[in-house]
Length: 117
Length: 257
Image (cartoon, rainbow over all chains, first blue to last red; front, side):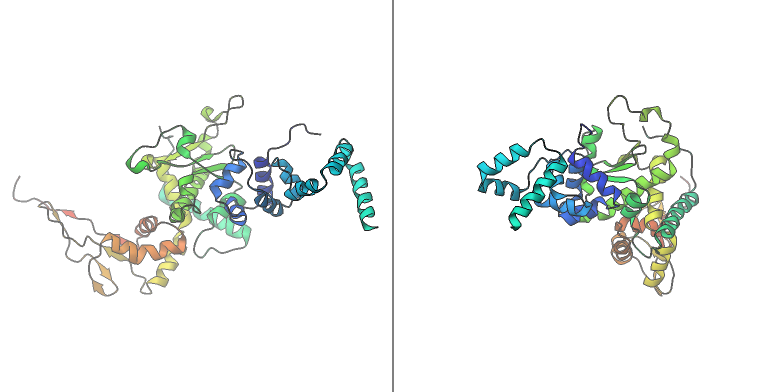
């Protein structure tokens, strides 16, 4: 694994350019000025609000939760879920911490099965 | 100090700009009939990134002059393939700067095509350690008359207002296809200067128009079609011989000193 994760701004710029989306074009879609987006892409400004990060994820075609994590955030629906059952879910997350991606996927499938039953 | 570059004839610069447009049209399968899609050309065809920043802060040069208007409007980094435009020209935050923003972009493309070979091996462009490399060309309004800047300006003018397309628009606007002549409305009262009697022709009428009138009546509608400033359009119309400006003649002094 690569130790250093690409910063939010550099990542969205690279993805935007690879998909041939103009700076002004993307700024318009997410409702900000090109100057603001330019500074976010240079990582001079912090990542924008969650709704805009989600919008960017949709434009560049990446997972919104992954992009939010890159922005140093957790989706508000996740924090709301944890707040509703803080003890049980915190325990579940701490236990699941360290599992492989495949293990977590298996656990998710089991959870889904339990919910469906 | 502005970089010294070889002399380039206007026709050559215009040919270069027309060649880029023709290549773009071929590659995209489009025909440009009015406003040149300069952002598309820069970002998607030439693959040069566009950024906005405070150019004076970036260059470490304080703003000076009347109203602290920025003198540095853009810069290009050849090696990194990026253009940085001064944020005062952000066309979304300042819609009235759309024309100047587009012209500055086209001006930087001019440096890219005309001057890149002369900067490519410039040791001043080398980046030491992890320091960001300096801009290849920093464009200052106050240096507009330097050959390197003048050439890029003329390239921008030719790129955004292509001869054939402007001519076609002119013919639509004035079906008689005749050039228009501007002359000062106020006579010049000076012992060494005189104006010819017939200076201006609008349709079949002889008359005079001020520069402002010409800007509003002739240059502005075309400027709006091409998304350039009315002044840039007026200069281009004059260059294309569609607008003529009468120049006061010096009176020949015959009666001795």
